[in-house]
Length: 182
Ligand SMILES: Cc1cc2nc3c(=O)[nH]c(=O)nc-3n(C[C@H](O)[C@H](O)[C@H](O)COP(=O)(O)O)c2cc1C
Image (cartoon, rainbow, N blue to C red; front, top):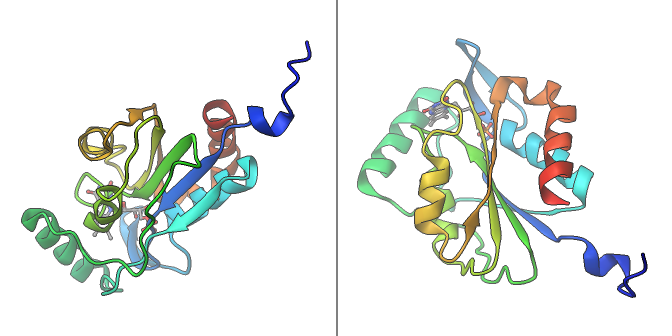
């Protein structure tokens, strides 16, 4: 059936807001050096599958490269409800239908830097999909925390991927993206 609308009008526009940290990290019971962050790789799979754009969150003060030091920084931030300063902020997401919030699980939720960005946006009318990479906690409190912070959003079913398995999970991540973001 012809609708008279050009195809581009029918396609959903997706933005991936992504935080990912390269450096020493925990994987499969040991500490390994990641040249690229696990979440960054997962976000790229989605972007290639759907044509989504990626906004990368960068903190002014980087988190430690050392795994243990980073876990301590992250825990202190979480306890303090910190909102670390970012290098750049998105101010308007009205051009997108879907927002994927992609980040690692840190102490059961996203790094505080992700909330520094999310709190500044108006999500009215947008669908928000959590994407979390982790080493055992799954989605943790991600969906609940997004619901509290993404003003006006509908929180849609998300995807939790084991970080150390991301590189071998391209087909699964791409299938999730096709099913949910099209
Ligand atoms: C500060 C910190 C805290 C973490 N806390 C958890 C956690 O609570 N649960 C979990 O399953 N994995 C935890 N991890 C492992 C990361 O979630 C996992 O390695 C993730 O894939 C890293 O993604 P990234 O490379 O994109 O930063 C933690 C890692 C770091 C560095």
